[in-house]
Length: 208
Picture 1 (tube, rainbow, N blue to C red):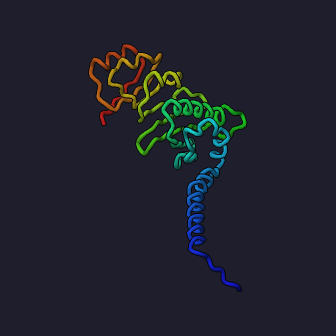
Picture 2: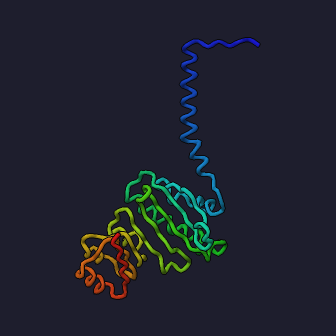
Picture 3: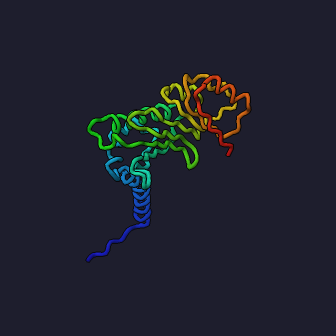
C-alpha cells in the first residue's frame, strides 16, 4: 500500500477541519440527542414545541418519581427576555391543559401536572396542581414577576406563592385570591389589609 504524506499546511488544515467538526458535533449533536423524546409524554409535549421555543427548552417530562398521579414537565430558559418568556409560559401552560387534560383521546385526563420554568437551579416559576378542573392551580414564583404581569398572563390564577411584594398594595390588581404563600413575615397591618381585600384568602406565612 502506498504511503500518503501530508505537507505541513495540509496537516494544519486537517487539524482545523477536525476541530470544527468536533465543535459542530458537540454543539448540535447533543441538541439532537436531547430532543429525542424519551417517553410518550415528551413525544406529546413536542407536538406543541412552537409554543415554548425558542424561549424555553424541554429538559424532561415524566411521572413525578413514584407518584403516578402527577406528571412533572421541566423547561429551561434559553436567554429570552422576561416578556417573551411569560408569553411563552402562558401558551405552554394552555397547551399542556389542551393536550393532556381536555383532549378526549388523552390517556392522562385524570392526572395532575406540575410545570417548572427554570432560569437556574433556584430561579424560575412553578405552576402546580394543573388538572382537568383547573380550580386549584398554584403559581409559585422564585423569579421576579410583577402582580400586573401575573394578572395579565394568568388572570384565572387564585393561588400564588413566592411573590412577597414589599408594597402590599400591589396585590390590589388581583380580583380574587384564595391562597397566598409568603416567604417573609407580615406586619399586622399587612395581614389586616389582605384579609379585608380577600376575606376568604388563606395566608401561608413561612419566614424561611
